[in-house]
Image (cartoon, rainbow, N blue to C red; front, side, top):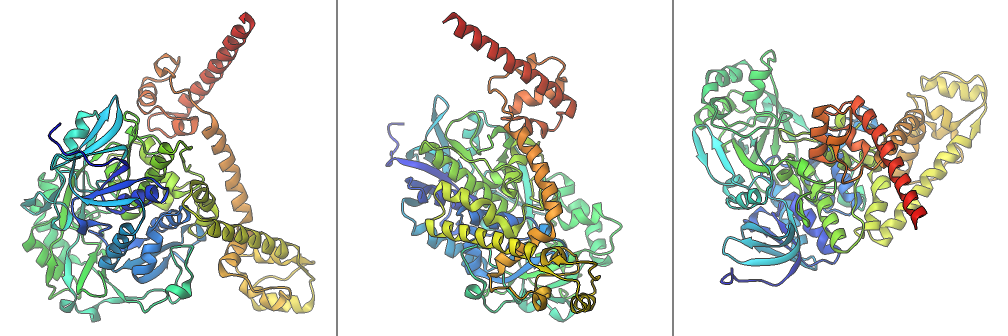
Length: 640
């Protein structure tokens, strides 16, 4: 060890410069900690090795929450998008999700520019091979050359690079995505430190030369005319630009026959792939086998950027051999003459069992070791960035001697994501979905700033000016709600005729504008002719006021549910509780509780294998435990 070069001390070392690593490193550096971020290749910074988009159903919520906390992803996609769309507009506001196609090269380039120009942040191209500890405390990291970087905290954001293997049919290459180097040594160090590892798999479709595609056989998919920025710091008019089109086509019987005839050559079914793949983002061969009754599957053709002809074939990820891929893709309408620029492939990689983590994303067994992203068993750029940001904030809070943050399930999708990872058993790559959020009506993408910006300010990643703007926005929303609910109109003939023209029933007596607005068929703008006191307001203020009034009953009901949830979250469980000594607990519950060691009753209730009856037993036991401790403390005071 004496022969190894020892570099200058850092406060934090971030391993990996993907979406998680970038957010983690920026959070630490912006909070004043000397931070170094390692990457196997400078070309992999914020790289988008798979889909060329940010956001989407539920993922758009995560990006807006990242922005509300002071993260970078939302700002970066606003700079580099080439098409923007709000999904699910025909449904309720709880599931509206923003999604943007990115110029992949621009996205990576812009994020790198931000990192390189951030104070207290150093970039280093090197493979980290070991974490260094003393008495289960982080003291540094070691790189492949033997160099040692002393530090007080490490954040592991290795993505899909640990012992990565790319598979295309019978061919395997031991590289990371896009042919970049894999990281082949760190896993061994982690295992030596007692960390439990998983082997997961993900995949990507082919990229096809745009000039070989017949778009006349496809349905054009346009972006929204009116842009909604991801970042709350941006205005639509400031980031508006000409947008590119995406295209929709479908697989067919011929496609499915080609796949079925060659299914034994798929490494997914031949046994060549050992890692577990994502259930909610299956390969095309998975879809054809599992949904044999479906005659066709959607295929979206998406541009990878303004300055490339590569088109991403969304919906057709695969690991079939190259010759099968050519025939398979060419069976799809519009792709008959397709020229493949990059083959589809699957990638296997090492990651951890995330139940080894605290809700702060610090390892339970090693102090100062944090982790985020796909290394934690999740999938997706947005899930990665959200975890990286939280891991970065909490590493910084720990080193600064401040209280770490835990976003709970009632505060944000980030809270749902992390709670699911650290509490529930994850045997496949975890993907965020709106259905996972039980309080989704109050966790909308539009109000992420109202929910989390104050926390970002408290941490130190949101500046005073942005915080004051939030306070003013809250004031304006409350004032407009109050005005609408207290502005009354009579049941005059003019009003009755007005409502009839809108397809709404008449009034039997006077009513407030707010009460009329609660009707499903009525919108805020429709009321303009009879709302004589209306003043110009920002669109986001109007939107929030309208939703709060229109969904008032549902929101109040969900808030009551949150109150019950909070009570369980506030019931802390002693760290040293011996679950094996709790009478009447089932054996499975004892084992699961002892392994995960939940911090509170809410978390305990969400553990797979712990039943409501077990929770009742535990609650009764904790009451006796608390009473016994109080009695013991009283006895000690009497003695004194």
